[in-house]
Length: 232
Image: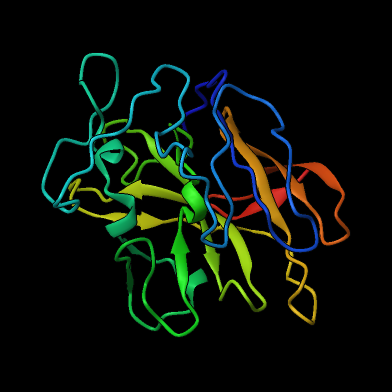
């Protein structure tokens, strides 16, 4: 496992969900990214957030096309940054509840009656090298952390942070175990949202808005070699 420390990688996501009409920007150098229920501000940016780049990532019309897995200053834009997230195909994303091996997003949703939406409301991905390479001798690559929401905007729904890594051949994207938010209230009128999230080395730090409307900072680290997360 690579332990490179990533400093200043911050994403701020502002929501208007549940029982609170708005959330102030928590911090970091990213602009507010919208709300999870399709009510994003027209000015919300969809640019990726990293420590060294603020320009929008190039959206590839064929996100599964072969490409080098190598990242770094001498390799140009890493393949994971070329992902067209609203139309991505992500394997092993069990959080979305599909029986298929892969979730195929189209225009940000998988299109089901109970939809799974990626980067809702203009949320943005965070990039960094924080997942174990498979196989172990594979070249070092950047990974991504993206926000996903399961459920209809007017019903109970749940959010999760999804670590995404390139497959060994660089053609596919697959999810590692996700960091789930709290379940919504029984009536579905209150939802825990991720207000902001960032990578701190190989750990994840997020500010969340709880069901009671209060905010708190939560931190997770990988608990085992399988990529499961634990709060600390």
